[in-house]
Each structure stands twice: as C-alpha cells, then as structure tokens.
Image: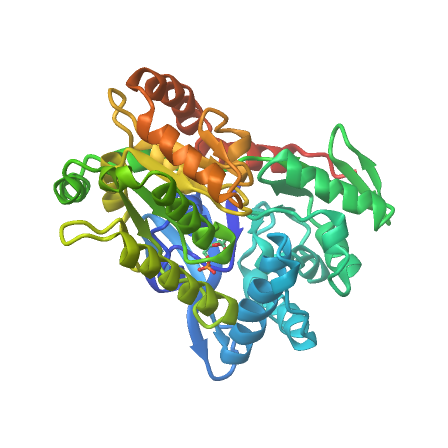
Length: 462
Ligand code: F6P
C-alpha cells in the first residue's frame, strides 16, 4: 500500500485545531482516516511568525505523524480570514451578500498556496498518494505540479460547491477552477455539489465533461470528479460513549432538565448554521404553544469560530440578543427555556449530552455534510431513541432521509417539527432511528477514506 500524504489547512494537534476542534469538522475526521494509513499529515501550525521561513516541525501525536509550518500575520489575515473565510466560505454557502472581493485577499491566497507547495513538496516521495483537503487549498495541486510533483493528487471539498450563476460573481473564477483540473481526482460531499461543479466546467470553461463517469478534459488535463459523502468515526465515537466523561455528561444533563424534554443543538458559531433562524423557530413554537413552555428546554452549544471576521462577530451579537429576548419573555423563577453555551466540549461529553437529549436540531441554511447529525444518531439509546430535526439544505439530508426534514428559513416549519418531535410515539422514533443508524454506522469515515483513496490509486489519468 502506498503512503498517504494528507494536506489541509489545519492538522489534529491541539493548537492547530482551533477552539472548535472537538465539534467534529475536518481535522477530527482526517485524524481517524490517517491512523489506518502509514503516512504524514501536513498543514499550518496555527502559529504566526514574523517572517516566513518554510521550516517544518514534525510531531507524533495520537498515533499520527504531522508536519506543520508557521505563517506570517499577513498570511493569516489575507489567506485564512480573507480569501478562504471572507470570500470563498460565504460564496460557497450561497451568501453572496456576505462575500468580500478584495484584491489583496486573492494575492494572499495564492502566496500561501505557494508556501504550502514549497514547504511540503520535499516531504513527498515518488510512490506517495497525495490528498489535499478543502477550500483553503483549491490551487495547491497546480502549484505542486509546477514544482515537478508527478504523484497521484486527489482533492476533497468539505463544503458545498455553489451553482454556476453564483460562482461567476467571483473575479478570476475561471483561473481558480482551472487550477483544480491539475488534480487526478476531485471529491464532493454529494451529487448536488458534484453536478454544480460539472455544470460550471461545461458552461464556463467549455471543458469536455462526461456526466456519467465524471471525466473532465481541458487543454490536455484529465481529471475525474465524484461524490464521496463523509461519515463519522463510528467505532471511535461509540468507544467515547463508554467513558466516565460521557456517562457523567449524560447524568448532568438528565438531572438538570428533570421532567422537561431536552432538545440540543451543537454548532460552530457560524452564519451558515442557521442559528438565529433556529431561535426564531423556537420562539414561534413557544408563541404558538405557550402551554408547552414547561415541556421543553433547548440547549445550544456554540463555540465561537473565526472570531476576527466581522460577519462572525455580528452573528454572535444577533444570537445573544435573540436568546435573551426569548428567555426574558418566557423564563420563570424555576425555568429558563434556552441555555446558550459558548464553549466547546470533548467528543465524550457530546456523546453524553446527545444521549440525554430527546431532540436534536441540525438546521443549517447550507452545509457541506454536517457530522453533528450523524453523531446524534450514533449516541442514541436503541430502546428509546431521540428525534433528529434536519435541514433539507444540509448535505446529510441526502443520506438521512428518515429524519424530520425542515426548511430552516421558515419559523412555522421549525415550530411544527419541534411539536412533531415532542409528540412522536416511541414506535415511530424507533422505526426512523433503525433506518438512520444503518447509514451512520456503515457509511463511516473509514469507508469514506477507503473509497476515495482506492479510486485515487486506480483512476485513469488519460
Ligand atoms: O469543512 C469546513 C471547515 O473549514 C473545516 O476545514 C474545519 O474543520 C471547520 O470548518 C472549522 O473551521 P476553522 O478551521 O476555520 O476553525
């Protein structure tokens, strides 16, 4: 078996994972993937340096070898806070209203991609398979090729791919997408994003596209694009559920909610997650069913994320205001309807919180996949499972079709779903959960890794 070199913005060492590290996400998933392969994981250290050196620090952490480099403050501002998270992230989540098009962001993005190529190419051996991840590094394949790297290069996009009519608002969009055609294999979370990508290549680049096989040819470059829905590390998460931390978290939640039904949401504090819209839905439920305020307590865990970016500061303020309004209007001396927690929690604690919650709200306005939805299902008691309320705009909705589906923009729809979940009989809860758990258990992160890497090794290069 060839060695696997994984390249992503963050790697799974505590500093580089950021505050939201335990809330699922790419770093956790790849950590599990890499444990099964001999290989190395390269990324940004999460540290800033005065002047870029390209020096690499190698560490072994939790059974995985990581190699990291530091970036300059200007790199972090222009590449991470700038082009990746103020241009591509909002645009790829269909938020053209929040998308910033600054020339220096684009320059910083290109410079940092070149820095990634410079620092990691000496680590790549001739027989390695190289797997690049996410929107921070779209042009990295082309940068590696220009340094003479001939290895098989794969790329996986963890977030949605936007419709062509939105993507064309990005200055130099053709140049950006053309760089992606230097990879041998491109992976997307589901068919919707895959079809959007193929449509763009046909319509804007005039590439030769075979919709059946996903083969794309342009100017002598051949690449293949396919859908690979990511899953959770099921065995690892279930093992977390057996720990003292998980049991304690479950008990804490049960004893603090007593006779009320606990509903939970766990999301990075990000406008794509639909948090203010979700709180509006809860407010509508309380308005429509005031007699049920005593039946429900909603716990929102929302660790802050990308806190230097204006749109993220704004969403935090908005959420605090909305939660405060509802609690002000609906609280009693012995009752607070919404608990809003800003800190992150370990996977074991989340397992316990999920198990004690009879409802989980996963209602993003747009999401590549959403692994919280899958973790919630995994953590349920088979004899008394809770109900997953899932946005039809999450990538996970294409697989978890037995969840209660909602339009997260509609407070009435959310209110109706909450009522339906509260009143759902045990037999229906079991019937839905028994179907959901099959996908969550079987389409796990190990299978995802094997599917992608075996295609990368065998996909035709002409
Ligand atoms: O997949 C989206 C993503 O950017 C991942 O790369 C990452 O794990 C997660 O969101 C958290 O974001 P950040 O790395 O910016 O904290």
